[in-house]
Every structure is written in structure tokens, then in C-alpha cells.
Picture 1 (spheres, one colour):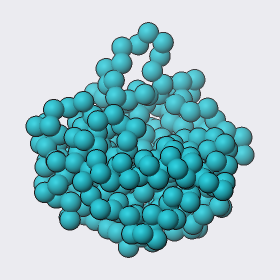
Picture 2 (cartoon, helix red, strand yellow):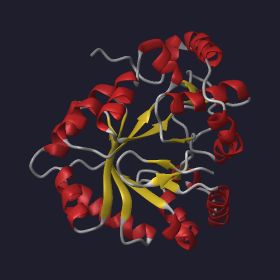
Picture 3 (cartoon, one colour):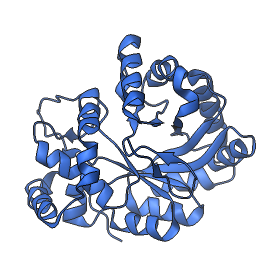
Picture 4 (cartoon, one colour):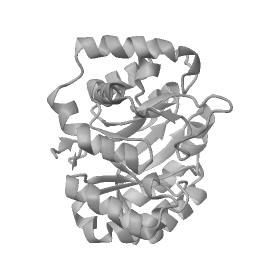
Length: 289
């Protein structure tokens, strides 16, 4: 699998990421097998968070034989310096590592998240301390709001952004366009999530993929492929499939096709038509600039 530059970090990463939530509530034997398969396929970017249940505990022994060969990313949802420092150190212990290659403020969704993180005594104090101490290499964030993400980029020179580059959101509301442009302008590494997601779960609908809070695509190969391609079309360096092994294996099986044949005008028109069908059930509310 090819390696792609992650913005200005100097890191070269695989176009498919391993989301640690895949290992949540799996047996250790299964987690070991999933990680070994990912590495054998050429995946070298692994992302996990303490908010993913027992994912860190499962990932630690599975990843140990490969640690020196991979980029390991982790996150914190804590907004205070005290809480984020505690969570960072706990994650390092849980994973049995001495540093994270990428560390991210996780799930920035509201202005209040930024205000707390950047205030005196906020999480950014931990991030800057940890970087000075060599506990983290590069600083990023994940976001569930484009407006909040853009403001974050004006407050600090973040090196990576993990953002929902969802085709249905983008093609009906313009969601993600400004983040994609900012990646070009500022040079940060854009990491895409939700590219293989369809829409919200509907009330009473069977949640066939219970680890996903929104409905992933399945049994719709063309739409899944085009969704993957959309993330790269928007400038993504890498994408993380929905958090279960079936979607991860689909991505592994089809990444070569996605990269060899980028999103065409015909496929973009197809995605526009499909996006209109779920306009009333988008995964996030449209935001006003």
C-alpha cells in the first residue's frame, strides 16, 4: 500500500487508517488478528481514544510487535489541563508506549469546547507541555462542527485535522468545503471520517452496526466506493472506515481501485443524486457561516 504525506508533519501514512474502535469489545485473539492483518496489508496509521471503551487495552498487545513501524494517534475529550494530562498519561500507560506520534483534541463540537481548551488551565496547556516533554510528536484535533474546526485553526497551527468528509453532507450543504480549502491553504494533514456513512439511524431502525452512531453503507458497493473516493477528492491524506472489521476489510480490498481511478464527473453526479435521497436525514445539522 502506498504512503502519502500527512500535511507538513513529515510522516508518510497509509491511505487507510485503522480505527481502534474496531477492537472494542472484541476478544484479544480477534484484536491481534485484525491488527496483524492491517499491518500485513500495509496500514501504518492507527488511531485510538480512551472514549472507545476497552479499545486501548485490546490494541496494546496487538500493536506491540509493530509499534516501531507504525504511526500511533490518540485523543482526549478532556478540556481542562488537569483532566487532559491525566487522560494522556493513562493512555500512554494503557497502550504501553512512551509517546504518541499524533495527539488530538477529540470531538470539538461547540464553541465552549474551544473556550475551555484554550483558556488558562485548559487542555492546550497539556498538549504544549507534552510536546515539550516528547510525549507527543504532532498536534491535531477531530471535530464535529466545521465552524468550530475553522476557529480552532485560527487559534493554533494544528498539524492534522480529522473531519467528517461525508459526501451526503458535502453535496447537499457544502459541509467540508471550507476545511478542504483550509487544508490546501495551511498545509495541515486532512484525515477523513464518515466517508462510508449513509445517514442518521431512523427511529426504530435495527442498528446492524452497533458501534456506529450513524448508519454506515453496506451491500451498496458502488456507493461505498464513491464515498471513499469522495474523501480523497476533497484532499484527504487518509480515511478511517466505520468502526467495525467488515468495513475495514472492504476498504482494504478496494483502496487500490479508489486511488487508481479517482472520483469521476459521472461518479460525482451519482453521489449528488444519492445525497438528495437522504437530505432529510443527514448526520449533522447544516451550519450557517
